[in-house]
Image (cartoon, rainbow, N blue to C red):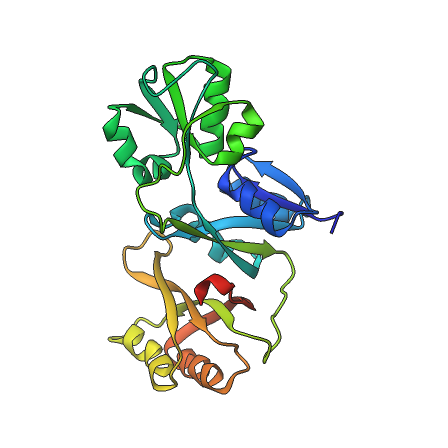
Length: 278
């Protein structure tokens, strides 16, 4: 896999970088400034895969991803879960007594409220968690600290002032891997997840009827997200995820029934369920 390039949002040392390195150790990790850039470099062929966070167990869905995914033209080929761990980082000579401000991504700040309150720190929002570590290293100010993944301390030469500072020990982010070409998981080779987008018809109870086939066929739906389409406040487009393979008879029947109440159904990916789900 040495010729594979995998793009991620953030700077070196971010959680996306960690999970990309963990699951694709031989691939070249390509840092991108924004999620839009990640989608663009893969769509253009400048990277082969994208590692994208889609949900967090505390913060919920990653809104930007749900905005780009339906129109990206990319396919989900895998999922990975990462137990999120944050450290409090400072420059050489800093300590828990010297720091006054703490920099990080808004989600990370929200997930580490206890330590921020304990030391009475003033929060400063950064573009991402690893970028916050770089900012602290560049400033070289013992009154400034960063909430960042442990890898960032190694990359930017910072001291670790405290470890595992996240409020909840179940803080987990789900990532999906995107590709230009679909890669459908085989049937009968372990649990599978199917992700798809659909638009309901503008009829009374259309969503209720559209979802009825999943219930009657015993298909477990693990995700259902709505979107505003074309600037309208009426939610007509939905992203759904279910357990099972489209070739499995229960899901096949449910998808066939779904088509009666929708204007279109687009499969985003059929991929192996990460063992974390078990």
